[in-house]
Image 1 (spheres, helix red, strand yellow):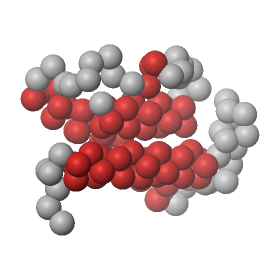
Image 2 (tube, helix red, strand yellow):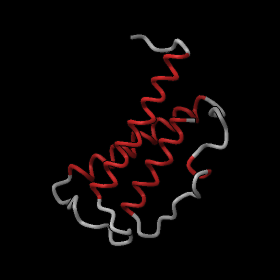
Image 3 (cartoon, helix red, strand yellow):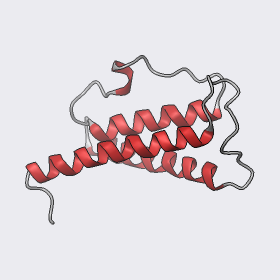
Image 4 (cartoon, rainbow, N blue to C red):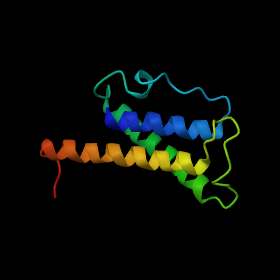
Length: 111
């Protein structure tokens, strides 16, 4: 659930940056998967792939010399690309720590 939540939120932020017509999911239920576990291994693998693809897109946007990190996103309410990229980083870091905690509690973490 945590990974899929991270994927959904990251995708929402990326699409907000890129697309003036993007509609965010309904809060909070739209940001969490409906099922506690992926229906199959393929769904899990796809979630990981999409998470990495979207994260790379955020990274590419931030590192592109043509990107004005401080410019306001025209369809936003004062947000900048830098603010949204930091939101992605902060949100992902928070939930990554939760994943580490869960794995430690389950004995599925070496270290």
